[in-house]
Length: 321
Image (cartoon, rainbow, N blue to C red; front, side, top):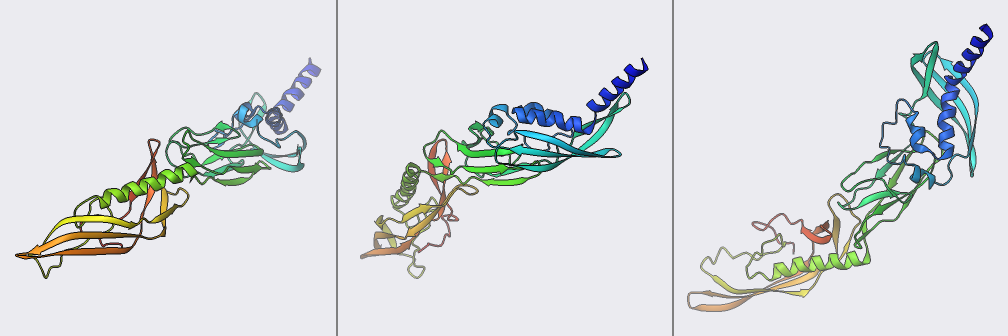
């Protein structure tokens, strides 16, 4: 009986040792069972766990293929286990921090601390309706903008997910080669060729709406106006018409904050014609704007691209040319 108790004590002691907790965690990681592996961590990772998905992790290249526990050091309520880890591209030595928060019978229960392990920070400012995937698995729902993800070692391929043919973004890789790395991935959402064409149409529609107005100061944040001369308060202006002598040539920056900023590569030219009279005196007036530029940004709303002017208003707005 004494021998049996001694054997049981040795078995239980080994099962609850710090190295046993690390072994359980890593054996699941090697098998690709990421969800079950992370469930053994305590405290759990503080960051978004969307990358902890068995299908996603199975598709991750250069995962850990084997490991060997080399040493264990225990100091009161903490422990450090040193492990040699291997992948198909190399190997490294990793230290795991463990804590014990409770006991089972006579034994301390050790768990791998998961609150300071590797993360991927995602700089993914993007329009609504555009989400993000990793290794072909969507990791964000529409409207979610999680930025820091807990990640196990391996290579992750990040890209955007959208039903729209108007937007695109170059994919980016994050290579996690240890359990204590901090990586950042930036996904810049750009307009496709189709998107650029429709964005230019949106700018044209904005300018067409401005010049179609038969007033001295068109409304809609158009950015131009003609003001009456205060020295001739009795002059009446009529038959006002605006025309586009040269359309501005525009291009678009990658998405940032609220949209794709419009850049005027070549300024446009506008002209106003009007009749004027004061008493019995009649004449005509011409105003020419030879350096009209577009100021604003393109937004993606309900699957369509719209232009938003950033001129500050119609009343009292200074002409831009």
